[in-house]
Length: 400
Image 1: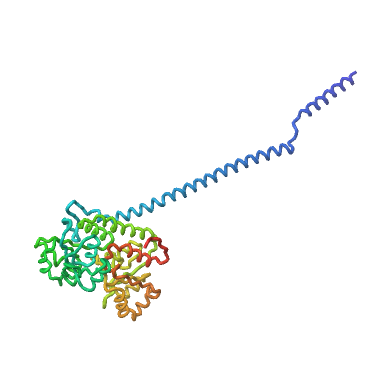
Image 2 (image 1 turned 135 degrees about the vertical axis):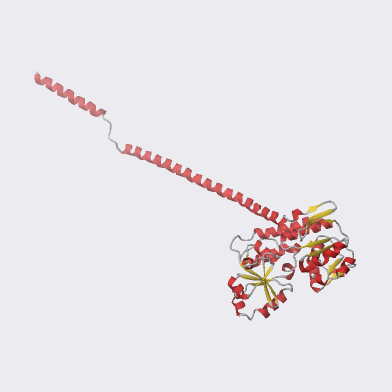
């Protein structure tokens, strides 16, 4: 009896153990592992999606940067062009044009007022005479002589000294050689002359004493040209020429300057050779200013020049030490004369022959009409030629 009870109890315990065993959770198996891998995969997928989103954001951000840069490039170019325009027109914009008169600052920094449409004009400097004709004017008296006749023929299209009714007031631009009494006795309505070569100094006092207005002209840059062309077209009443010639020249010059490479401009020596003397053009000359505006480094501008002279005397030893990349040769007599002077004065000199620019054949002889005489409306052509000399490796796209 007692044994039967013990057996019942043991059976109950075993039954309980079996029940509990049947209710126990299974051990992790392949499916559980797969679930875990799937979870990792999902996490990796989320990471990939997150990374793709970041990458897409970076691409979008880069695209935005590139788009912004593309949008800013034209704005920067236009800002540069506008700055050039304002710089070049600064002097021209100071000219005051009224219904019957024009007021401006002359070459002596004096504010003057001139009546429009003068009928009898004596223009006593060839480059300013051609400018007067380009502005629609006609002169009654001019400078004559072989040298200036070439200028008239090139820029005006004829020898105006042969025009009917015109007076050859002098055969030289040097005021000391003028017959001032004869010029004043002709009673012109206006005299236009240069401050160079003593012209204004010779004629101003006698003319003003006779009640004849005198305009002193001087220009050493493209901005100066624009100013005086504005003055002349206003005086002749040809505002249309200011628009079609003056402002057109401005746009073409800016076209050139917009293509000039930035930085690392060539080092130049702008040479003015005359027999027995070697001079260098500084930034105070038209040619020096042009070179500077196109990024060239004019070696003469680093030399001592306390008086601000337009040209400085120089010797070959100083030139050798400066070691220019190229030499630009300007001459009042033209290329043929310049070559003759250099052949006579320098080609036999070992210092000249040892100059790097000479050895590399980088000596350029410049046109007299464009680079010694005032180029006037042909400034753009002069800038184009200069740009191609300074940067021969550059392929310019400006229209010639």
